[in-house]
Image (tube, rainbow, N blue to C red; front, side, top):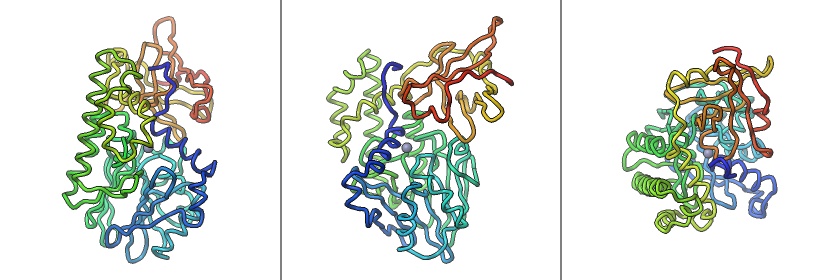
Length: 393
Ligand SMILES: [Zn+2]
């Protein structure tokens, strides 16, 4: 897996932003005057969608008598246009922003709205991203907003800091990238198990009338429970089939050519657009579901935990949380690690070759770590590939 230069879907999204928006595709230019469309999906709930070449990117607005609550804050570059779109719904002030996760489209506008008086709410792992934040929570946060009762809760799907947002009265679930109805969404570090846990939790909080709003969609900006269960079945079968072929010893290229997998993927609206990115999906599924980590005892794993200091401003923390080994630095990054040997620990889910190596003292104790990043790695800005010595266990 290490030799394969692939990006996780999460990263592909980041790249797509850069591609679609910075190079100004003709599609975006055509929409320049009115880049957003608004759908009122419930009495006081709106979905504002940015329309690009590959579909809709969906953000939420909840209206109360005295203000608005935003579900995700859009990009830094388009904040004025986004604010103008919101104004067509209401002139009321934005009182809260809730972030689904650290994907750029979900949080880059945070500071813009905070400067106008909004309170920003994010998952506690958000502090390990470069994004602006204020209020953080771990498992669940409930908020009464006008006549609406809002529950934001941690989901095991998509990423280590993903939350879903459920509006009880309106019966709407905002899922961001933990669910899409037009293509595979990133399962996240916890693989299929985490992905399904996320969907099942969202299904159990709602009912047959719940509207599920994905962050990225094709033509259909909401789904019902039946749609969600359909996607759940496709993704489960697809993942199991990848596992079967992987265990038979097939290469990624061989797996991607499998007819059963193609038949499953064809159920999605975006098959013809994204079929060439199936390879990335398959690699990511193998990384998070089927690769067996190098075996280390719990005691040996604890030997890697600690603070690895670069200078007074920078230190990487290696911790074990809920059984997972994590490397993180506030304001910068958070990765789960997969041991590939005693020395080499891969960034799980990121199907690139970026990884950490550990060095040992003569008596066998972990002494230092060194990030090893690809030459063009997006993470170089946040994780300089310089050796750091352990200062504290
Ligand atoms: Zn994402």
